[in-house]
Image: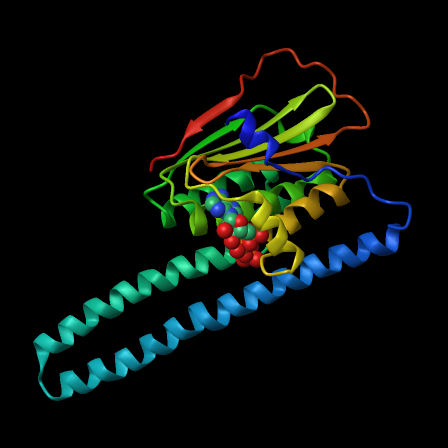
Length: 259
Ligand SMILES: Nc1ncnc2c1ncn2[C@@H]1O[C@H](COP(=O)(O)OP(=O)(O)OP(=O)(O)O)[C@@H](O)[C@H]1O
Ligand SMILES: [Mg+2]
C-alpha cells in the first residue's frame, strides 16, 4: 500500500474525551449490539424467510405437476428448488456467522477464526483466503476474543460485499506487548473520506462498529484504502502486562484455504 494511501487513511485512533465515561461506552456498545440485531433480523426476514416461502410454493407446484403427470416440468422445477435449497443453506451459514458461535466459548478464538474462514470459503469459493496465526490461544486476553471475532466478521463481510477481489489475508500476531490483527484484501478499494462521511450519517455502520469495538477494549483501528488499491485494516491492542518472550517451539501457522 502506497504512502499516499496511508495519508488518505481514516485514522481510527483517537483518545476518549473527558466526557466519554462509562455511560458513553455502554451506550456505544448498546448501539452496536442493536445494529447487529437489526441486521440479523433483516437477514432472517429478507433472506432465509423468503427462500423458505419460495421453496414451499415450489413444492406445492411440483405436487400439482406430478398429479397432472407433467414429469419433465416437475423435474425442471425440482432442480430449481434444489439450487434454492443450496442458497438457503448458505444463508443459514451466513446468519450463523453473524451470531456469536458457541465454539468461541467451547474451543476458543483461534478455532473460531478457522471455522469462520472455512465457512466463508464455502460460500465465496472464488476468493482465496490466506490465514496467518502467530500466537496461541493463551496469548489472547479473554476480553479481546469477541471483538476480534466481530471485527474479522465485519471485515470479511465487507470483502464479500464490496471488494470484488479474488484474494484476501488475515494475520493475527503478537509483538511483545501488543496484539495485532491485520485484514487485507486486493480488491477495488474505496475512498475512505467518503466512507467516513457516510458513517457520520449512519448509512453504513460496519467501519464504525470495527472502530468502536477496538476502542471499547483499549485498542485502535486504522483503515487504509484507496480506489483500485485494495483495503488494509489494522487493529492493535496494547497489553497491560507484556507477554513473556516465547521460545519458538511452536512455529506460527500459515495456511492457505482451498479456494
Ligand atoms: N473491503 C472493502 N472493499 C471495498 N469497499 C469497501 C470495503 N469495506 C468497506 N467498503 C466501502 O465502505 C463503505 C462503508 O462500509 P461499512 O461496512 O461501514 O458499511 P456497509 O458495508 O455499506 O453497510 P453495513 O456494514 O452497515 O452493512 C461500503 O459501503 C463500501 O463502499
Ligand atoms: Mg459493512
